Image 1 (cartoon, helix red, strand yellow):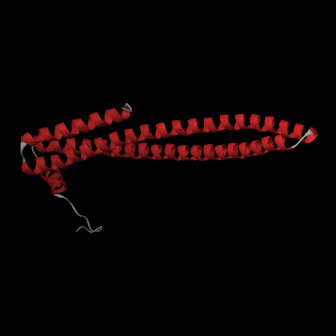
Image 2 (tube, one colour; image 1 turned 135 degrees about the vertical axis):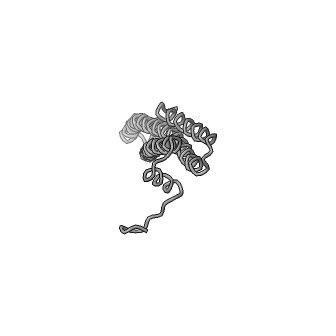
Image 3 (cartoon, helix red, strand yellow; image 1 turned 180 degrees about the horizontal axis):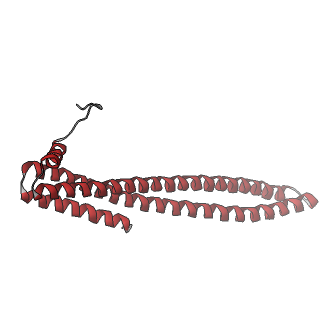
Length: 191
């Protein structure tokens, strides 16, 4: 416990504090700096992962809005179809001026349906594009999440390396860190 509150330190923190207070060998210093660099990069990658996830959700929401609008247009189209059907029935049941009025109504409804159909299809296309963008953003998010996880593994391995003082374990840190950086590069490139 410190005078400013309760703090819990892990073995890695104690090793770093020991090196800072008493000096350390080159190996310990290199691993400590590497750990700090990996932590910083991991924090940035974690932030980017959250950003890409939010972007995916935003596009998914946009797709839902466009799908709802398209559905509303198709319902409107169906209502016009019903009116057109009633007008067509009225054409067969009436004569004279009333029949002529219903024929005009049939033509008007047919024209209105074309416009409504075109609008509904545009909305469906916008929904499809937003879904595609959402899938792409989620794919990028998965790359960020993988890179962050690999960097966290590298940080954990660096703690084990410091505690065990096994120099060969440093290679596991390098491999995991490198894989994390490659996954981060794939996220940046949108792959």
